[in-house]
Amino acid sequence: MTWLLVALVLVVAAAGLLRWRRPAWYWLTFGVTLAGLRVLVRYGSVMDACGLTVPAPRWRLALARMTNRPVPRPRAPRILRVRPTRTGLVLRLKLRPGQDAFDVAAASDRLRHSFGMYGVTSRELRSGVVEVRMTGYDVLRRVQMPPLADDTRPMRVPVALREDGSVHYRDYRVVPHALTLGATESGKSVYQRNLVAALAPQRVALVGIDCKQGVELFPLARRFSALADNPDTTAELLDALVSHMQDVYQLIRAEQQITADVPDAEIAADIWDLPEDLRPVPIVVLVDEVAELALFATKEDEKRRDRIITALARLAQLGRAAGIYLEICGQRFGSELGKGITMLRAQLTGRTAHRVNDESSANMAFGDIAPDAVLAAIQIPTDTPGVAVTGDSAGGWARIRAPHTSLRHAVNVCNRHADLTPDLPALAPFRPALGTLAPVPAPAVESASAAA
Image (cartoon, rainbow, N blue to C red; front, top):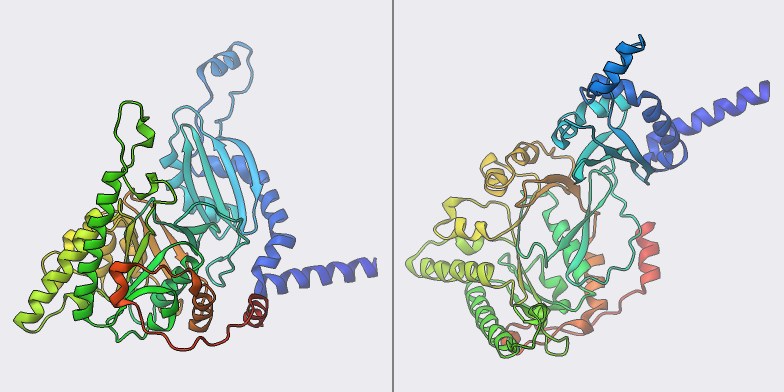
């Protein structure tokens, strides 16, 4: 008994230490088993207390009266599957007649408290089936991206971790253009570095616009096909992109081959319908600070500003089919930046907001698509850089956090894949001038030093 008591004390102490210092390890060793038992044992009473039950059907009530048996209890949604994950539990529920997926979503906070979990979210998979994702700890406090399988889909890269433990992807073919907002030291630059580092190994041309004299994007210049560090060069670069877009559309028209014997699915409407040997390289345009492009002090600056905003709006409206995608970043984005700004915002489907300094910026990001996300964006604390709120035009939103990526790591990734940088004739005048390439450490050495 003495040795058994000592072993029990050691196990409890180890569990407490892991829960404090390494919550992910605690969850995988102790938490997932305890949470699973807690959910299964409390399930019926918790669902009843949260108002997620329905009365028994009439035939069962009538049968109980005829046989003089107790009245059947209300029924909770049926559990189809319980799946443990590295961050929590996933429950798949079959709703009873009369229940709605919104009922489960509205009770998420009550379920979180009742089951003793850190977070609970739900989504409807199909009619009558709801998936409830529970997280056992704060996965955003120390972001650890899970091992990812090789994804063969082009223009789809992982950039952050969601609060439910799933990976947040930036899929340009689904959401071609995006707006990213964030105050100083909010983590916006780290998010941008993750995006560039994830795109570097792919067959894509990167175009950067950094009006802070290039301090953010020029260290990554070896992987960029074009860079601009002032508004005058930006105006010329955007005009070149518009001209390139028109040339791509001419290529698509020449290859459409609309004849009676061509199936509808093979008629080319964008670059992804073209044969691979004819397909132009897709282009991702990263604008580091959009406000610097919209401000002006003189009449000449105003003309240049209108030229830049008009070109950006044209690329946002027409660029998707030509394989041109926009990533607009800024500290402030509001209607006071002048005409054309709200028209540009309407074309930016993806929205991500880090900590912002004012409610108007959060409203500009989410007010027209997900009003609930506005309050979540302005409540991001200052001591959690990198935490952001992301939303889409469907009205859904979630908290995310990108893993910390140093500028040195991003530079090494870009240098390692410098040979993949496309040479586009239309953008040749804006190709950054490069010096001698410094030696890049091997991936294994770099990953070991990063882990240390």
